[in-house]
Image 1 (tube, helix red, strand yellow):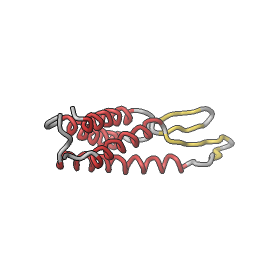
Image 2: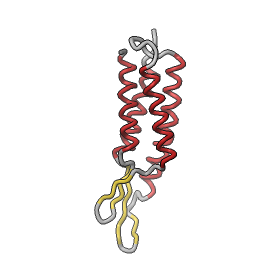
Image 3: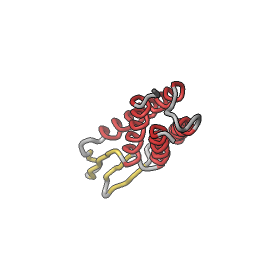
Image 4: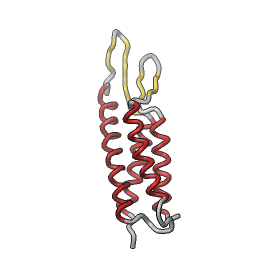
Length: 134
């Protein structure tokens, strides 16, 4: 398998795993981790990561992705990255300073799943945009 396809495959698998990991952490008398995405968005993200995965393993595996597959990975990646960036912004800045709820301090931050989603998507997009067929 070509190195670029392998990178995209690993990024897609990491993204599929990341969708199931906690996307936010809320500190309120200890730490609570939660997957902060609803079921419909979760299914859409999973479908987009599966599209990236299938694109990486289809076709001639010893060659880098050709144009339609490259743009499919890039488009799916940008959609995922847009949503993950929106969630990162809303989770990180919703309670960026501790909120006071009836005397209890509450702070929200991004979780491991959100970070892994962003990193895996950036790797997939960078791979298709940097490594080109010669």
